Length: 202
Ligand SMILES: Cc1cc2nc3c(=O)[nH]c(=O)nc-3n(C[C@H](O)[C@H](O)[C@H](O)COP(=O)(O)O)c2cc1C
Image 1 (tube, rainbow, N blue to C red):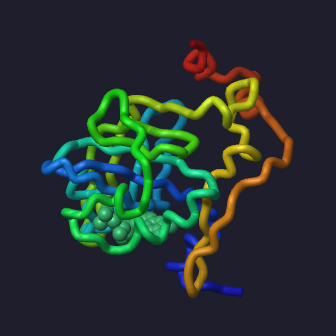
Image 2: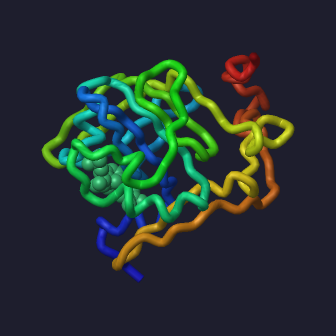
């Protein structure tokens, strides 16, 4: 079947992250964002595509910081309440019944109960007529211990990362399942050496 080109996101399961920000007046805001991606290994940059009319964008421009919260599937019922239009003066933590997890290096709080939090500072913006690409530098990345495997990787069976695929009528929420297959990065290189391996040493 051939689809219209703009249906492209329906066939790439996307993460559903909650971006939490704070306004100049100290009002807390939350919005779900799926158009997010890390920019290349081993950089510490995240790219978020935002429409122009977003309190999230206003707050990021005002305070140059935001948290990318990664929820499990148990947060599915918080997606629509945080995606619905609310006036900028509404505290969206209260409105959605979400508790805050104080951040360590920025003012904007994270959301309690998520499995991971990226405290970001605005690094750069790329602006077009219809959208803005927000580049965030991850200053601090925390993952709740209970969702980690003994080797430090994410246990997706426990974390159940909230994901979404779009269709003509809306959003289908889903998650990831492990197929128990692992390959080291080094397997991609002719000499079996990962040039970035030392970056991962503590
Ligand atoms: C699952 C989901 C993913 C979304 N992803 C994005 C996105 O990547 N970029 C965007 O600009 N809006 C996205 N939205 C829409 C915003 O979340 C929505 O417009 C929200 O009200 C914006 O809130 P704000 O004005 O408080 O920032 C998404 C909505 C949903 C439900």
